[in-house]
Image (cartoon, rainbow, N blue to C red; front, top):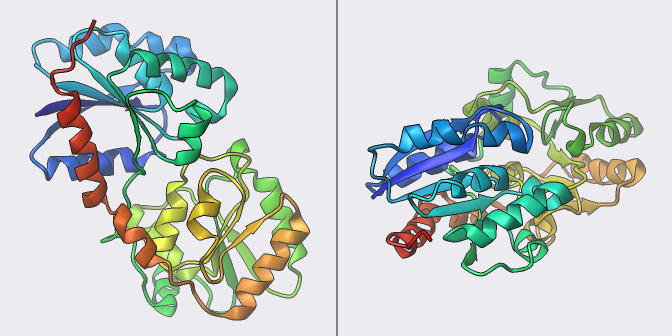
Length: 307
């Protein structure tokens, strides 16, 4: 089977797309990747001619597009069927949701990374919920002292890992900053999740006291699942499927959009001096397990007639 992955190429913040491609290659599927350069719907659609040129003579069985706009671009070619995975912003943001749902009507099959996104999209036909897989070989617990030494962290400070870049408005860094400033009883540093390799991120998750997510909206945030694989406590606003993932876990908390509430939960985690026991809950979301689910979709779609 030969598949073309189509995804945005403006940012390097989607490592899970490459990881998913690699996990599917292990199943014997040939995966090529097409990166879209351009912003907004018009910027994306300007890639249509280039996409058709890339496909010429390649005999792909299908396209697997990641995110709604990538999917809408992909369905404009009428040569092969398209599978679209929706990750969050493509359904949560009203204008993009309209375009995403248009793509969902034309595509051969749709994958939503959480039940919440599937519901928000109106349960479109030819759809399935499949979360993105976690590389459980990279993301695994490590000794805190050694992780801090390798990262050059102090043994005295308390480190809290922020779930994304500080400059991403959806991630709501100002709220996280206010919460950290409210926790006055500890020497705390909020660590930005930016500029680190995947192996370093895994070390961060062993070096820090907790992962803090203050996002305004999410789909099924990968960073939460990666933290769970490392047994790192998670403190998060009630977004996406985070509540479903962590509400029953020890030392993990859902908070209001309130700095004092977040600070109180941070205090609980820091003072407990224990991790969570969440790795077992995430093994079923390993890259290999998810790849098998996606492959089953490909087999269903292969031969789908494009009209």
